Image (tube, rainbow, N blue to C red; front, side, top):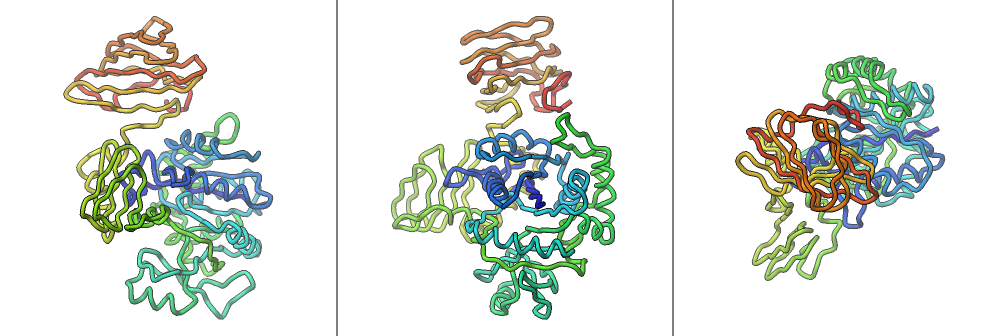
Length: 475
């Protein structure tokens, strides 16, 4: 049996300001309305005999992931999760999935690793490549998928195939090569036995764990402990890794930890219409150009402007006399970059981190297990939010030390715990919650509950919260 494992993590810093740590690249909507995570799930479910799909992601992204899957999954399958307390790179993520798969399905389970942030446009070719990879994996190989290079790309790692060891399915890997300069990349393209490293893999879980025990014990040993002492929910579908044990795992990619060290790696060459959507230039290619070469998402007016990309779905954008720009507009940040420097957007994210600015983490609208909140305005000692609570959902029973809150219902029905009182609020009704009061907000109705929250106090940070009860395991 083949078990697809979707790896959903990272911050997608080159796609800031739309991609952020709390809403990373796999969740970004593409021009066709689906996101990369949804496309990855559907691609996995389309493989013959797929009944189980595992996802490894950050525990903070679990509920958003389930919502994304529910929007597209029409096929009966068993969706399971391994939840990381924090990122530890791909080696630890893949190892934790392999340990869990072995416990659930045995040592002969075949594991297909699929990054959630890649686009594959030729799904028939993908299915054929997976069939070849399965054959090699069943014979003990650690299998990579090598993408036939379309041009001399300097932003990807390469796989050199060993032409002396060829099978119907592919080649033995001679070596992995780091991102080359342009001249070297051109020589790789002309050589014919170099492939882009796609980050997709297939292997038998017992074989992977044997190799990791030999080559990457600093990853495997802590991961084994993190799985063993982790917390499994009542249904058995969700394993949350033990944070203390997981923190000891080496922060390293699967390529560095294992693939470059093992002598048992094979590659399946393939042409899948593959892209890692690694920059705004790559994202722009998904939108058709107009007569002046401008690619636009949203309402855009232009005059003597050429070859620009604009992503501005919520606001009118006007271009006058500019060329070769990337313009990305969000409610709280705007990016303007020259196309030649699109890869350098990550340096802005680094500056935000070093300055302690939360624009690399959160959007103005933040998704929570119970719904969303949007910060409308904030200033000295006050913050105003629009809160949406889904039908049947509730926030935690909580308390704040430094702020009071005033809730005004806009639409729907609110069930409120405020200190020792429990009350029902309808539209245009409100309640005041002093600092230090235990309180809870729930939606007992069948439509969304929308309310305005006005916070006031000396400190309004999101970390001023003490939870006493929670439906989502966040205590």
